[in-house]
Amino acid sequence: MTDQPGPRLVVALDYPSGEPALALARRLAPSRCRLKVGSELFVREGPTLVRHLVDLGYDVFLDLKFHDIPNTVAAACRAAAALSVWMVNVHALAGGRAMAAAREALDTTSRPPLLVAVTVLTSHDGAELAQLGLGQEPVEVAERLARLADEQGLDGVVCSAQEAGRLRGLFPQPFRLVTPGIRPAGSDHGDQRRVFGPRRAAEAGADYLVVGRPVTEAEDPLLALAGLEAELEGVARS
Image 1 (cartoon, helix red, strand yellow):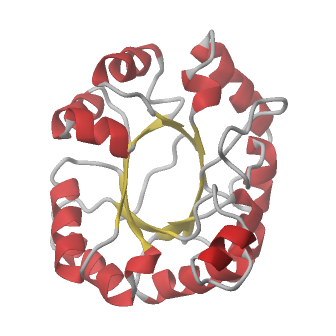
Image 2 (image 1 turned 180 degrees about the vertical axis):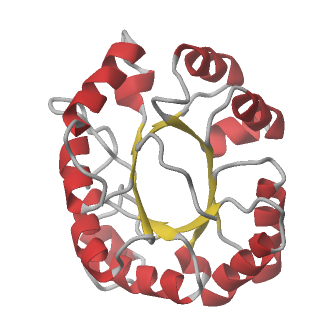
């Protein structure tokens, strides 16, 4: 899928229910941001919530990180495409066959969303990867999984902004880099360990910047979004 130029900021609707998510969506604007729906909200509200957001005019990133056998991953991706989402992801650790199955499944749909693969969660560091039997630093694991995703024809990967510069050097556009864990200057990092500010992430080569609590928990979400936009001002797209 070829996505149209639009907002680089993706607001993560990490709410426990649909009511506050829809309330925030109605305050924001599709011209200023895209929206991400993750596991908690989707399990609670299901496809109906996603359709509401799409009907409001938003590009929706369905962030469910499908990680299963190839047939199941493919079927889940087809179901996501039927919701008219803008982007869907699988976990690269599901393997090359699962990613290839997802790609093939989406290519049979009338309006395939962008398909990206999660590399290393931004909550993971080298010590935690070692516990999982991945005896490399996050950037090395991210590079290896990004290569696998690229070989299977995916549209890009989800990676920490700390890895974005290295991956952008290896994978030029149109390979997309989606970076979660974006935190404006002075904000709390929460449970994220590998985070960047929006300007640094964009300058490193990130295409889409996912930000959650700094907007969703802000006293004035519109003002918080404006602050992020200001940090990105003047940074050319990679």
